[in-house]
Image: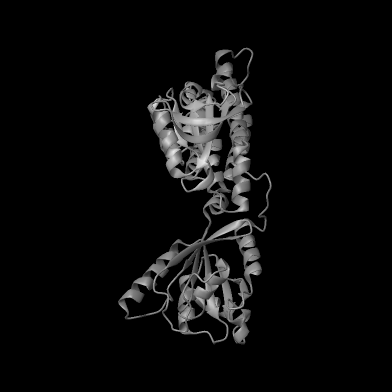
Length: 471
């Protein structure tokens, strides 16, 4: 990142053609720089406007007085702005060429192009948002389903920040008590304190464990559930993909081996997103290209969060079905008994027997099954409900649940929990109370990393560089 005291500018809207385009400027000279290139018909200056007032006029090149565009300019004065600095937004026509012309004028008159995420970094440095709220900004932008958007908005409102601050406050209170008791033993007693501290630490660890338990759900909500569609050739895998997408995305024929490579698509089912991978039919083959596809199918199977195992319910189960069942043992699996419209000869009892042979040590393992016809589009809603039950305990709802959504947040919680565990070890070993404070403060700082209160500059820069331009 460059110097934060510079005045920065960026195109804040999409670069495609649109009715309206937005160019954003932030910094101590934002208003005066725009004043150099903006002309109001009545000669009114932007510096005379109050905060959150707008002015109509034209952007023109002061070098030759050439009009660039007809615009509306909104002035927002610090500290009550997104960046906590003076900000100006220019609403111009949404063509990439005209927006770039406006940008060029601003740069020539004293601004510089913003780095990716620099507006949000200034909001963070100005204390308007903490790091979890800053990350939630990009989560909102990248949301692909209702649940992801709801989760991101809750985090943006500060619910994770509030929880982390609550945990840190308890740690700091106990650390301060130890320090006070060591400095002033006449007024503060540590006689019963180790047992009380251990109880407090256990409760803190329990709350951290509860947050950590949301990580997998949080990742799936925001990134989607990696879903491998597998089965032997010609059971209808591509037809199932097309059914879920609602369009003819994959080629469907009666010829076995039509799909020779993995085909990846995303689909939103209610509040969840599936990252679908249509794989080549898993079988032995001498075809070089198909063999590569089969290997990629097996790799996709290993990495998947969920397996949709497609069986042709109009045909008896085969050895190939049995081999695939053995490969997916232990994976969250839903069996789709496809082609029910052709007359079913395979049912749930057959599936239960299939997996009993694949995993003879499992006790009464029940693999969820859905009878479907991809050709007719049957079974989609039932599949959605099954996935909700499997991954979110049937509780996919828009509540105030706090989700840990990225690895950085998870790492901070893990480190904090490890430090608190060391406090309990010290208590059990009967060491002096002054040793407790070392690990308590380590936990305090690890939690501080999550909200950005102890974040190193290079890590902060890396986080904000992943943001989109203009945000």
